[in-house]
Image 1 (cartoon, rainbow, N blue to C red):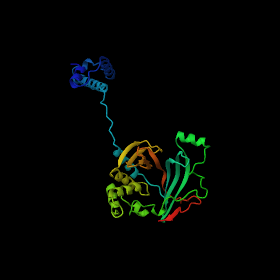
Image 2: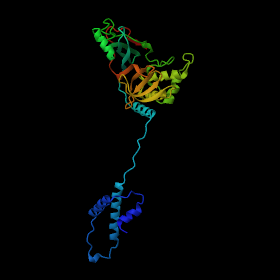
Image 3: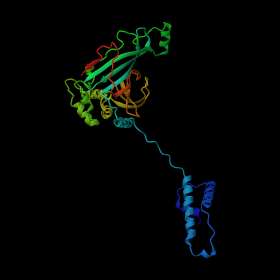
Length: 334
């Protein structure tokens, strides 16, 4: 029996190599393991030498033939949107926070509507909310631009002489910015749940514990349905000065709320592309790579976004927020 018959007996299930493949394998074997001449004096003294050389040749040929056998294809493992959210939440929870005395969030708000001229316009404004170490709170809204966003609207606007569209910067010189919300409610998460900044920062970082802590403040006299109340508190917590761990837990808590689903690859009309927590009429969009909140958008009945809040920056620093000149009621104390 030669070495190739040995291979056939050892590998009965391997695909039969072609003649060219066998010739190439045979050439490699004899090139890699040449048999030196044996002197007459040594003939008969070491009968195992020939056996060792044959074994080595067999091993080399087996390896060569194994390389020729194609490996089975590995099917990619499917990852569900919920698993992607869990991964994003874990990355957010592990994100170190910047240090500072003031927390500030800058949001660009976008709304598509019809103005007084009948054009379909896209209005943009900057919304700022900030908190300080001595219970101070800052907040203001500053109009940025207003312009047609459809081809028809743009043509009609140009036909009319390209009039100045408001609200926008420069429209109201007496009030370039103004307070758009009750600043004293800046940390309110839901009816009956208004923690201090310290209490907010100390909320649990695990979904079940966070749920229990939030529900301890639920009052059926103030909110009829418990689960919608809890979902509202979790959604506000996501966009607050809470720790990354608490915000990550709020993601997972909100994902299990009735009527909420996790949606992947959201094609954002306003640039909010990512992973979304979707509920009736809206979405919270998350960067799947970092777990950071990108913003929220509101959906028309046909599912098309018509308004959005885009988080431009959020975090801690030692820079005290300064409201624009002539801004009224833009600072308060909690």
